[in-house]
Length: 564
Image (cartoon, rainbow, N blue to C red; front, top):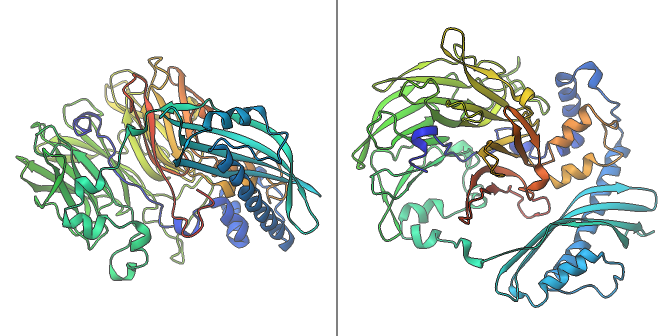
């Protein structure tokens, strides 16, 4: 990864929710529970012909709440069924269990109880007067009698009677669509965190604790915000062919550089990079073309450039002044092919505020984000801001959480894909104008890669080995949001228009296959559900010649793990 960063500057950053995310983690749900906010958002962001009839009665909210109660009951009963299937047991009172489920139960018969795991998420509920239909995603994992790890994922449709006392009785199954059972060795990956980092004080005192620990002990008023996103970067700092890791922390806590040792452990070194400034993103790249990995840091003061001095220390070489302090991601590539790396910086909310000082925030097609910037490397640690000159000012007003350079059209120069929260993503194709200068043309809609959701990450790879790069986009995912938007009582009652827009926020990740040059087709059904994905990467994890997907996902659910 460190070497790859020299060419296309892999985006080494951990992304978190925007400052608005804690109060709108499920956009669809918030729209229903906050009528005044909903009304303002719809009026500000939709065209006149997009407005649907939106009832505002308490009865509508009560109906949705009742459907959510029923969804919880359905999920609880389906979890019992899943727990039986993963041990090879079929409930004795279910005589019409689909044949596919009987086969799955047979495959898991005799599995090791210590390695069993099952998950059930109900994502669609349809109510009628005395019954309801529910569709759930089910995932089963267990160590099979063969010694292999078995995993199966699929959808299960069920029909339920609504009893007079409000309880539910299972009446039958409407569908059971499962992927073939996947078998693999247990130990593809093993947890190495403690053995690698467990003896380092910096890890024990800070990094070993999760976010649920820190949010109960740190207040933003004290200068340290546990919710603030912080970056990390991998790179071979000292040239020993082992990747080292740089981990950023919230402002007030020192960033930490861990050097990879020959015995597989790490050793923390200061090296002049233990800064206390809040650092939202970090990137190891060779800025000065001397063969080692330099360091780029995004801080409120600007983009800091640090030179690697023999793998022992880093020296400050300058700061790029940006239009906003709200940097989310860094990505580097030589876009103009002049031999010097260039740096692209994304911003989410930026510094735009309303007339009375309030943050302007839209859930749908948000165009009030920060202005991303492109800095062209001039050599000798000098950079020039060239966003407008290169055409990257086109549509440059979204909540951009991630950016990835990649030559998707295979013409020899790096193009740029930008993932945006609460709106369409962008694909900037790198072209030559009539004067021989490099300019970017935004073609996301034409190419079919806008993916109007809550974009948080993007990864390029050729998953079908047809010679054309494909794209995977990480997005917001919500069981609750899917259930609500599928209900007839959802306030935007008509299909199309805003209903489809808000359903998209709950859909999850997107797999886009390039079927011909500059033209993509969505094939999300070929990939298992990645859930709420902050980041993702194509990689051949099992060394079989096919690119797999690794997806970092999850959300803070406190004591309620229902949604994720």
